[in-house]
Length: 525
Image 1 (tube, rainbow, N blue to C red):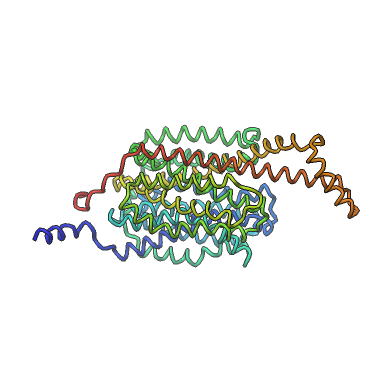
Image 2 (cartoon, one colour):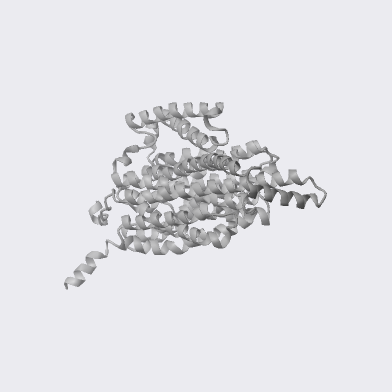
């Protein structure tokens, strides 16, 4: 009898999943996947777009930068817009607008049009990402998080990882237009499904009267200029460039006004009170650093394969597919572990695995290809999933439902900013360390070095036998070899830096408190 009573009492705490909510959530996940994928799918094929639009090398970078600047503004704003318009209206408009902007990108005939359409695509698409995280932690009971959390963690990490693979295949098999056309059919389905099945909350149109327009303007200046400075800083030699200085000044002024408004107005454009929750604050910090690892390695692996190995976009994608496969296979395991293991232990294992993967890369040489990169990529893929699932649960799993919409925007913003900061630091390190290593290696390769002199004579003699200027050809070849080795040594420095960063996170994990079990549905009322 007691067992029957216990069983009956346990029933309400674990209700079956609502089919309408499942369809709505599936549609939202697909929308988020398209939005995140579109960053890396284009980055792998910028040279094809540049040729197609007859753009300059300094102009083509804005195809990425405009998207990222617009997206980083929309992500924290989406929580407020979801409360005003409802999740249904916001997500439907974002999915439909993203689909339309993708079609416009495919029809662009010059670089100016492409930059405008990409900014529109990034801004509208950015609203879909936090909505999925908010939905996952509000519409499903805590008992389902072992299924839901790995799904959003997988999409958030898998999309940027397989981006180079998908982008390389599309641009090689078809044309660069298909990087955008591929979004149209799924985009239409997502838009229709979102409007039909999303019904999680009601709009609060009255909040529009209290909307903080000054806060929005200052946030746009702050985050937009921050993204611009981080994206373009290394290429323009940082503060020696007038535009970077202006961007930094505007960013600082925007930040001061934004934070002042956020803490003083009644209804701020972004509610920062979620950071008062210790677990959310630490979860956001971990998300920031995961952004460094996720976007940093998605950038540096293809850079090595292109610069040193001479791979094209498709070959790079095929080599990097291993990480995506490892994530996909690890996702269900991470979901099961999330309900059986202390999330702090899971994160510690994930950070340790990530550090091991980057440490293995410190043995890099110019001959490394698929098989040498296999284990580091497997470790990276598995570790990302083991980290992301508990980080999501720690950051958002202990917040009250009314805070989650705003908090999910802030949480996703930290990952994107982590990626931007990480790429800026990595690019700067590669430039500076490569120059330093080149100077140091050059000191040893001179006419006073017998081995270097012998190599020069042999190579020059070989070229002379073909009727060429052997001395000049040998000097160029030697300079190329020294430059290549300096570049590889700078890659090794970056991987060692990432190893130290993720190794130090293992110590930080011990500072967070274990999330308490969420109350059953009856207790929440």
